[in-house]
Image (cartoon, rainbow, N blue to C red; front, side, top):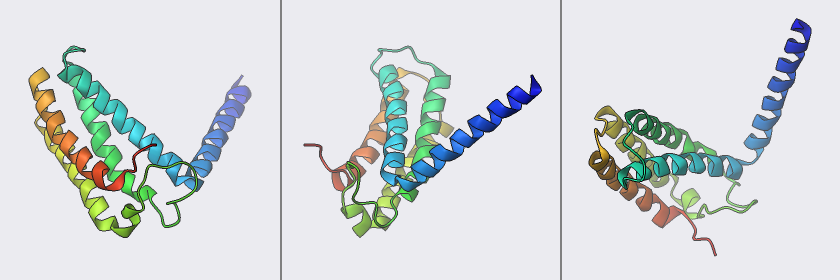
Length: 149
């Protein structure tokens, strides 16, 4: 029984290694996954802010932490040469002005951390937090995200 478990664990870990190598070769895919995480977290906050979901401090905390942590690593997935390839919404302007792009990501991450430190205590607080984070998102998307056709 132990041998089977060891083999299953080894197979699972090998599978994770293959996934990591594939993802490392496709920065666009990694970027898209990271943005999906941010989108999901923002959606959780939005549901609370709109009153579609009850206020839940743990969900608010987890969502803000996800946004903060994700945008810290997000700009690292824009190496030279990844402007092209698979379908991407990343504007070539990112590579032309990487410092500004990184600053915008850092602002979002910093704002999410500040809000996390002063956790919104109710629906209205979550709505106010989304107002701040939404401006950060828009500021970057307006400049660095291509519109889908």
